Image 1 (tube, rainbow, N blue to C red):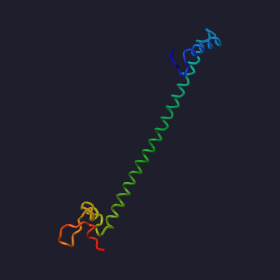
Image 2 (cartoon, rainbow, N blue to C red; image 1 turned 180 degrees about the vertical axis):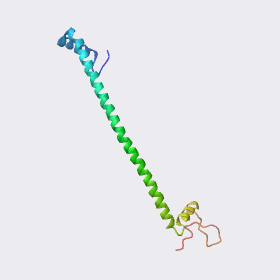
Image 3 (cartoon, rainbow, N blue to C red; image 1 turned 60 degrees about the vertical axis):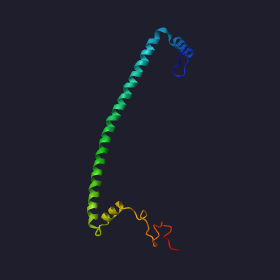
Length: 129
């Protein structure tokens, strides 16, 4: 036998018999119709609530997107204005120097020149104590 919502076949038969005794064979179709109408009405009401919720939240979503786009536009304008102002404040071209240094190997990677002419010396050997 099959299980339906944790109810075994024997329990389903007992429930059907109790329903027959309480309502009688003639009133069971009426009870089933009333349950069907109630379930249908409940489904319609829940669908209506979902529809209204979607409509109202779409308006809010549109407002949020519009505000977000406006803020992004203003941030870009302010960033470009700051960039223009700070470009005049760089008399030594530090930005260009820092960019060119990042392309060159760092000083840590360079080999330390040897005082002796015996050959290359590592960094530890070149430390004078």
